[in-house]
Image (cartoon, rainbow, N blue to C red; front, side, top):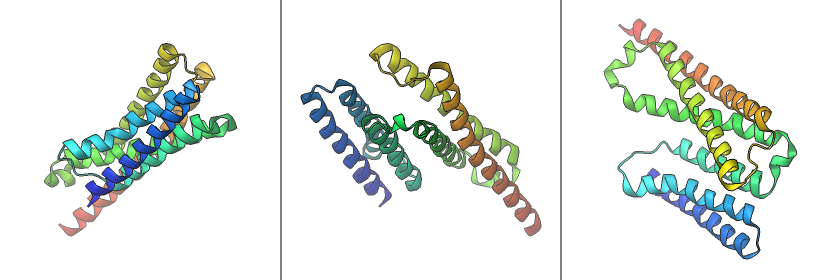
Amino acid sequence: MSRKIVILLSGLYVLFMSILAVYFFMNGETFKATVAVGGIACGAIPLFLALFTRLTFNLPIVISYIIFLFGSQYLGSIRSWYGLGWWDTFIHFISGGIIAFTGVALYERLIKRNAGDKISPWFVFWFTFSFSALGAVLWEIYEFSSDQLFGMTLQGGGNKDTMIDMIAGLSGGLIIACTSGIRTMYKLKKQAKNH
């Protein structure tokens, strides 16, 4: 069932961005058309994974990802909400949390089920936080590369913009990392009481 929902949501987003790309190209709005093409590529990732892999999906993460794309690409870039000043920082904060949740889901899939009582809460914290930090760095590389290669202005404020974005992303990731570490600590205490 979750696979069908992922296909539906991703398909709708790709269709939405495709319509926008055609509309903006026909009206000579190159920047918005380029953002829409980027939206097609980003929206197609969960669609591709659902159609061509056997992955099981964490539906809340996929839904959060689509909402994030809508907020950053459509509202932020196409509808110019980034001009509000605080929207960019808010989006980076939210993305840090989403990436950290993805790190938690990945961590839970990678560990052996019987290893749960041997994993340090600090390891969970650092893995989740590091995963979020990696996401923040990769996003800033994407922004820098887009500006350099395609003449976009994703890093409108230069170094200051980059640092604020990274701090916001790391703050969102830090909250989820702390929560995950504390949750693991309580699980370990509960398991210790039961033995």
